[in-house]
View: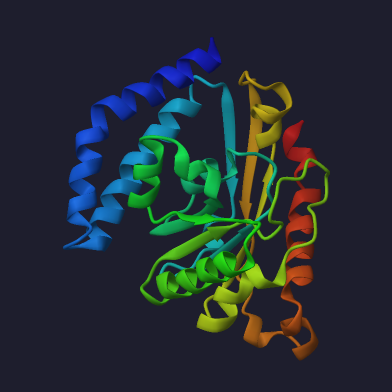
Length: 243
């Protein structure tokens, strides 16, 4: 019933708000940031409404670590296809995110993702991947934060896979802070029980800002390992919260 209820909410959202989505796509041509803010509010509301009947209890920590006066690069571990959605409803600032290109083929959803500044990544095409990174840099310079998973794919182990240094280039090139994000429980909400949602507790924790230009030169050359360690430190503290 939880899965059916969550799907019902999403379907109703797409039906009711599809005309709004088209209007917002038009508005983007004249005032992109206003269209993005409105879209983000609507999409957050839809995700929150869908997750409530899904049986999720969400714990968000560390919001005070996110700067209010500058865009940031969120670097999160990746456990589930729901990570981006649940991280998205937690962030306080105007934010776009990077998703795999396959999602671009999902009707209706792809239009909303364009409205909230989603970038679609082809993980098999290095040139296309570099183009996405360059677009992330442009977004950050324009005042948008970016939510990214530096592992590049999902991992269900306790510790995340190595973080790719290239995914952190937007922070290196713009000087924006990196906010490490530790996510626990999203795979147990859905991934471990496909195709059904299960009642579970999800933890999303935002770490303290990392300013790469303040780190030793050897760390700046390979920042992925450093950011990954910060995420692991937070993940190790989640066991007590899951009890």
